[in-house]
Each structure stands twice: as C-alpha cells, then as structure tokens.
Length: 374
Image: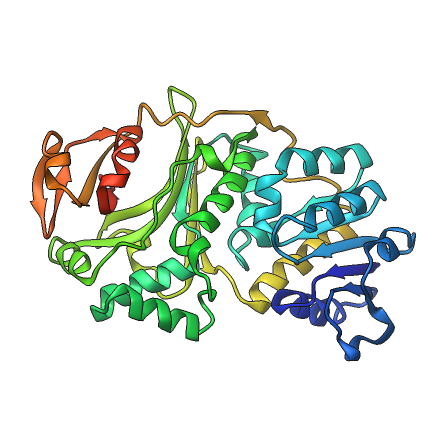
C-alpha cells in the first residue's frame, strides 16, 4: 500500500514514522509548503502530483483548518483514493459533502483521530451503533481545558497562570481560543453526534460557553460545596429531538469525570441495551493521534470501505425541553434575581431553567456553569 501525507507537522511526523514500520506500506509523498531536505524526492508542493499518481492508495490529511484541506481531500476522494484525516474542523464543517463524495467514489473516509486523539472513540461508537440505539453521549473531549481546570482545582491557582503553564508544556496553542472558548470541543461533539444518531447538525446550532472567565475564587467555592468543574460536551435523544451543549459543568466530587487528570479525555455513550460505556486516554499528542491515523490505514488495507455511519439526516438542535440549574457569577446580580434559588461563593445558583433561556442571558454573566443533577 502506498500513502501520501498532507502535512508534516507534529502528527504528520508521527504518522510518517509509524507507517514505515508496517510491512507492505510505503510513504510515497509528503505534501507541505515548507522544505524538509531529509524527505528528498518524497516532498512535493502540489496536490496534483498525488491525485494524478494511480499508485497512491491512501491520502492521510493532517494539515488542519478547512482551506485548502477541503479542496485537497475532495480532489483525493474524486480521484478514487481512500482518505484518513485527523482534522476535526474539516469533518465538522464539510460532513455532508465529504461523506457523500466517499460514497459516490466507493472509497473509505476515516477520521478516528479527529475526536479523542489516541482514544478509539469513533470506531467504538461505530460498532455500538451497528447493534444498538445510542441514547446519549457525554464527556471531556479537550485536554487543554481539562488540564487548566484540574490544576486550578488541585493547586488553587488563577486561570491566566495555569493557561501560560499549559502553553509552555505544549498543551495549549499560542492562541488558545479554540480550546478555552469551546470551539474545538463543539466540532468533536458535532462529529460524534452525527455518527451516534445518524444525523447531520451544524456547529452554530449548539450553544457553547467556555472557561475564560473562571477564577480561583469560583473554584474554591465549588470545592467547599463538594463540586468539581469540568468542560463537558453532551448530546441526547429527547422528546423534542436532539439536544446538545458544550459548557462548564459542576459535578459531584465522586463523578468519574471529576477524577480525570491533567490533559486526559473521558468520553462515554449510553446505549438502549448496552448501557453506559466509557473511554479514557490521551486526547492529543504526536503518537497517540498518529496511532489512530495509522490504525485507520490498516483498517483500509484490511478492506474497510465505509464511513462510520450510513445516514446523515439534517437535524436542528432542540434544547427547549432541557432544564438545568446553573451557577452564575453575573455582572449585574439583579439580572438573575427572578431565577435565583441559592447563593454559592460569589455567585448564585438558579432554579432549573430551559437551556436556551440561560444562553439568552449569557452576555450578562462573567462566568456560568451547569450543575449536573445525579
């Protein structure tokens, strides 16, 4: 089998090393705009070289972003080449287009590394969907925010200092917006929900809040109340349809997610018959992420020719029937006087209110987090 790699960064370098360790595999090309003398003639700068070579079986995309990644991946699929990608932004934004192209051209499209890094989350979800109805999915899908919240909880430090430390350790990007404001997590939730329920939803339909405004004082109040804050992505089948949110959530100290340390992930689904099954591991990193890309390549070599789901019914998120209590630290406390139920630290806890109502008031908050009712 011959592979072409799009991108030679952290993950691309890992895939290059690992693929060459497998007998019968050859990395024929590496496409990158930068120069890498050690790659010799394997390095190319045009996608045309790859799509026009009939000997290339699999294209592995690890460039990130949506442009030119979409154009390159679409060209590969149209040329009859299998595609493996770790690019969550690409799959979330072009889910319908790319899955349709793969079906039309009779090739595989696999993206296991796009959600959960090295965790076999999407492949496990695929297997579960083949024998059961998935009722809900939930969990920690971002190592950066989990690291920040975990260290703040254990060491009592302020957000800014812990974020800086995460950047120094390579857990957070120089621009951490996608992580701390929830964009990265929301893309992963879109992909997971689409596969779990056989639907197609839009990123912008899922309400999202992040941890940018959290303080050490908030954390201290949560700890005193026996609560732990984590960023939780969740979706579920409801009477109204599919509900979904990405938001900080206060969990009882004994909840499994509350014990997830540092930059780890924990994601679970609930099946109608299977019940709850959870997956824990490294959500990012060169070799964990590369391992899932290579595993996808090996599955294709073994004959895998499908995506994870065969349906993509256009669906609108409906959160009207989801009621939650929220911890709120507001710019103007009077703005929440009508829903306040009790005090907690510098904020209040609301009575159970519809999720859309909370997000309609979000601009009046310095920070808010849902309370999980056990």
